[in-house]
View 1 (spheres, rainbow, N blue to C red):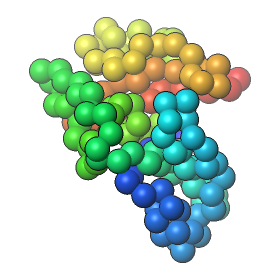
View 2 (view 1 turned 90 degrees about the vertical axis):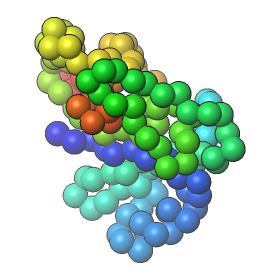
View 3 (view 1 turned 45 degrees about the vertical axis):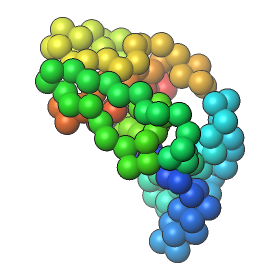
Length: 138
């Protein structure tokens, strides 16, 4: 099950207005502990987009690279690569993480707890995109 897709933007207000015209509603608008505005837009039927407002002049990007997985690019220079990602809910994250590790999939954030206290890890897909893996509630 796809949970959300997350992007970086230089102007969260402009993004909110654009997606509101497409039927989205703002369900979260807050400032993260790192100081970035986080905007979550929800669509009827459950789809969500998440945006972090980051100015190009902020910290330089942290680039993750692996021989089989090129470093992800960010249009506005995300200071932390985890900001742009696709999040997927899986039934048994511990078992999946072990299988992925055995298959040589690079982890950009090891298995640990999310800010909400649920198991979470980040891996890179073959194109270098961040994929957040979240444990399904059970």
